[in-house]
Amino acid sequence: MIPEKIKAAFLVGQMDMEVRTIPVPEMPPGGALIKVHSTGLCGSDINRIRYTTSDEARVLGHEMTGEIVMIDPNVTDYKVGDHVAVGHVHIPCMHCDYCRHGSPAMCRQFKEVRVDPGGYAEYVALTHDHLAHSVIKIPEGVSDAAATFIDPLGCCLRAVYKSKVRPFDKVVVVGNGIMGQLFVMLLNQMQVEVIAVDISEYRLQKAKGFGAAHILKSDNGKLEEEILKITEGKGVDTVFLTFLNQASLDNALAYVRDGGNLCVFAPPVHELELKMDYFSFFRRELHMFSSYSSHIDEIIDTMQWITSKKVDVEKLITGTSDLDNLLDTVKNLTEEDFKIIVNP
Image (cartoon, rainbow, N blue to C red; front, side, top):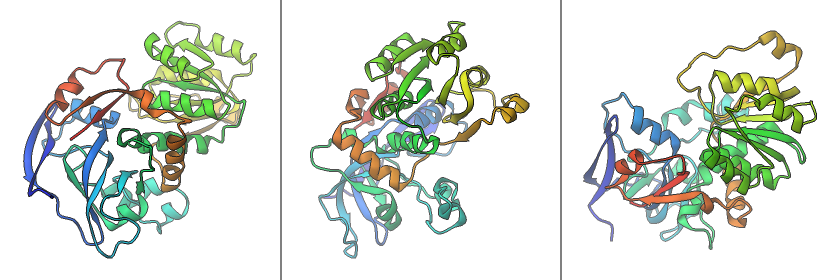
């Protein structure tokens, strides 16, 4: 039975959340109502909770899985009782210039559409477009918690596709938080030689366990020297920057090979403008690109990676929370926490 009222955790200010009782979301025409089972606590949500300057009360949460409890009778691809994962709360229009050129995350509609309330609520309403371009059924044998990874792993997979890495390439992953660990796991399965770089010994050891061939402290003063030694003086083929500041960019430019790739996978920390030697960049024919989202194609591929357990995402789940304890969970996060699953 669908309740009239539900609980939702609202972000109401910097490090300030309130659990409120609200009406159950109204199912839109052509859409569905989902009972949320699990929502991944994303790094972007953590940053919003910690640093928001907005006074707009909002329910975050976009890495959602759950069960369809109501659906428009005209929808034939899904039915009540289906367990589904939401690949994106943002939906591209699929026909603008950006979408047609393979950049759906640049689509104006993609930037404007979201789910409100988000996944830190007991129920969410999804539109017809969500069902058509973002939702995917969870295969038998895949847990709701594991399926929450289709968004973050899909983002990593898109970046890997864009980088065109090949088997036996040598690749550096800078930053070994949750996204860095997903890169390590994914690239290891692609027979890529991964060099994990981080300031945290704990996270480096985790990366080693997930398949990193080499682990290096970013603050040892010998990073360039050690990477050039590993690559016999050539430099690495690709660098994935999941942590970005002036120092990490300078280091990456020093140890990437001529003609190599730099993937900017995170916004800069504290510094909005970073400097670079553009003459050297030009003469070395370096390729630099950013990647922060994924597409329905990557979402489908990602579910196959999760289902096969070639990327065993559940090994990255380090805790759970409910709505009432969500703020305390964020306050108590440490370097040993990778993915927290919120169960409304």
